[in-house]
Image (cartoon, rainbow, N blue to C red; front, side, top):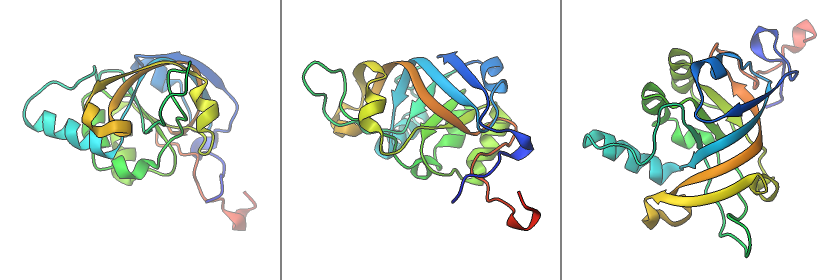
Length: 195
C-alpha cells in the first residue's frame, strides 16, 4: 500500500530523541509520520515469546521484564558475528502479534516496533492506553544491528532466536506509523480529491 499523508495533517517533519522507559508525555508528543531516534533498553519478542508471556499472565506470574513504559521490538535476530553483540536484527511482520498487543498495552506497554499494518483492535488499544506503533525499515537488519550496543537473553532461552532479549540501543531509527491519537502513516491516498 502506498504511503499517504498521515491523518490529521501530519507529515514526516519532526524528529524526536527518546529514552526508554517511555512516558505518557513522550508518547503524546508523537504524530504519525514523525521520526524517532530511540535509546535505552528495548525488548525483543515474536510470536512464540508472546504466547509464553500470555501464559505467564494467565497463571498470575510477573513478566520477565518491566512492561510499564517498555518498547517491544518484533525481531528474531541472527547469531552474533565475532565482536558484535547481535547479528542482523530486522523487523518481522507485526500483525502476528496483534492478538497479544492489546493486553500488553493495557499493562503499560508504550511502544511496539515492527513492519506492516496493525489491526483495528491494536489501534484502539494504543488510543486507549497512550501507546504508539513504530516502524523499522524492513531489509535493513544489518544496518539496524549497528544501533544495538548490547544484547542479553533474559527469558525463554529455549526459543532460540525468538527468546526474549534485553537490547541496549542508541539512536535506533524509527518512524511513527500509528500514534496515540488515531493518526496513521499507512493511509490510502484519495486520488479523486487530488491528495
